[in-house]
Figure 1 (cartoon, one colour):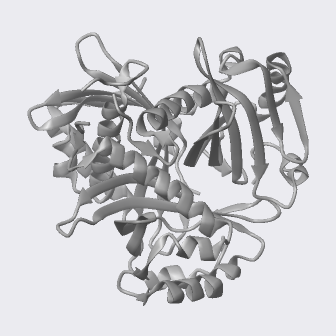
Figure 2 (cartoon, each protein chain N blue to C red):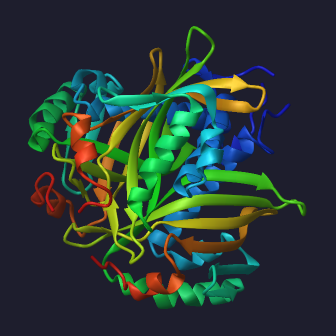
Length: 154
Length: 154
Length: 154
């Protein structure tokens, strides 16, 4: 089948990426951390630009288990927008999105986390698409402000 | 035409679903309840998991007319994310999304409803795609909390 | 290649539009006003329904430079939903979306602007897709209420 290219990326790949993210993010949100970590490659990088990053799926999993419980009984959800994909020289797919995170408290109140830009590198493996690296940068003067906010701040 | 499959669902079907929802949800938001109900099949189910549901397009229409006016002059909008589609055994399409609803008051204030997960079954009819069932589950300990919040709560 | 039509619009065109907007909106949000204006045709129209509009890329650029700085160090982001596209009689593409704008303050607080409906006309040029006209209508009794809110109001 010939492919209509969208920039350097086909409509088929855009749909495949949409489906990949649609499965990946609810795993984190529903605290299925092992299944979430499985959507990354073994030697992945996950971090915050100019702040810190972890390397490897085990470190990612430990980081998730240590940090997400700070939300307590609240539910974190992510709203991605402006997905732009490009083929990188080594064959990986560079994906950039803007993201908004909501936190729904058990009593129904909803708070918003600062918006951010997420830059991913996605690779195709025998098991399907996987995230090779994810770097997050909030729309703040520096990432320290984000980490100082606490969870579910108002 | 050969189809590139996205999971079990083609890029073409993903785009068709996107267009279906893009037309369906504004009908409800703009209180065009009859046109909204027409996007469901005659013997549809619409409900909230563990709480209640209505059966049939007439009951859905009556429910909309009874409940949506509680928003008064405010405008309800829905923001869907993470659309995952799969072909069900009977040929219907199972669709799961996360959803955020905003309420814009006539004076410009915006409030947020608790986030939720929407599970739809979509079928292809002579008139195009139609919703056969929609079950909603908010990110709350139970649906009663949602119904206790009132409209446009802050 | 045969095209599966989505309404009057193919899955390929939907993906192309998605990519167009995914590039266009961050240019405005990141205050790259010249690059943003370049995504419009030279004799574009940009305005608010029932309020005012500007004509031409130069006027659009001047309007951006005059108005966006009111957000100060805050970051404006847009969240589009329900993209509906149709082919217009003159070959342009009519696109309607609902939009939510967030404003992230430098201290991390996030406020919401009233939701709105954006109606675009998109044309294909030698440089790719470009916006020929954009008309915005907020979910408010009139646009004056929006302009009276100020930036980053709470």
